[in-house]
Length: 329
Image 1 (cartoon, rainbow, N blue to C red):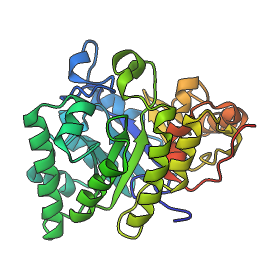
Image 2 (cartoon, rainbow, N blue to C red):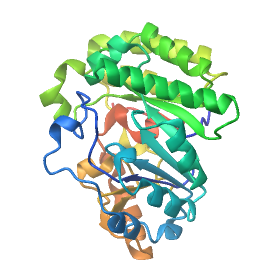
Image 3 (tube, helix red, strand yellow):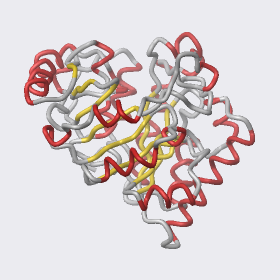
């Protein structure tokens, strides 16, 4: 699986855009949950479109619409239609509640090319413990996912379909990961992308029981061995992702100098452009607006500072691309 390219984040210039800060779910580890909506709003259509007017300057070929829950945005149709005229691919990430066949067919007609379902497990008990989902939410999300995949199998809806799964203490086992991969394979999904939970300040305060620790390292290594069994059927993270997570859980530190994302990915948060999805946590490389000058400045800042990055195993690049990662001595 060398040089693996997950469908969601292939090595194509990609812009990830948060179009809303609202969500109808209350996942334990997410700060955008419905129980924490004070001051959270949808970004205006005007601000979304204005912040991306110069996408051609950075050669963007794919837009990933994120949030919050993108399908809650009242202007989602206009947003998809707008971006489909600018880039090759428009993908959205959804928890599934509003991802009905009717809605996705509507968005497909406007230019949507793919959907990534946010799903940590297909086992209700794990979903409940990871995300505090109600029985009705679990049933509806899983039902919608399966209906969409069946519609694609039957040739009714032609969209790239995948799953994004967060690995926490609740699903960090060969059994849980295998169950999800089997489910994805049976539903003929294109990929399952795993992210390791990390403490961004919110998780440690509100859901510390979900965090991984050194005691989970062996389970992570077992998962790595199991992933190989599925590599010919469904795309997942590069195998070394799991090994790297295990090493960091045991105290090893990633060498930021082995980062390889510069120039390959574009991220837009809060109307600002950056090369890296996570470097904003370190206040590095952020510039206001997009122009030749600001892009050049962001790239220079990133190249100078990336070696100092302390992001660790939740690094976007590590999760998606086959990099030669090294560790600090």
